[in-house]
Image (cartoon, rainbow, N blue to C red; front, top):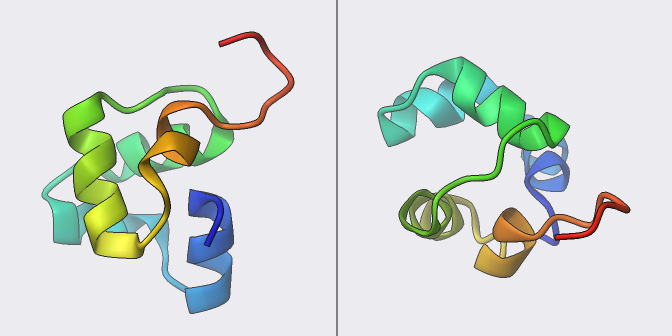
Length: 67
């Protein structure tokens, strides 16, 4: 997987289910997917370990904005 949104779509996982598994609020995952929030390095590592999404794509999503 190259992005969190691709992971969620391909596995038919709801953001709320991933959030529950990680002990997070569902809005946290939703905001990361929408590009409204970037995870901390620690959170990016946890998400990456749970989903297989590369840490760098979580920390620096390709949004067209300067990082």
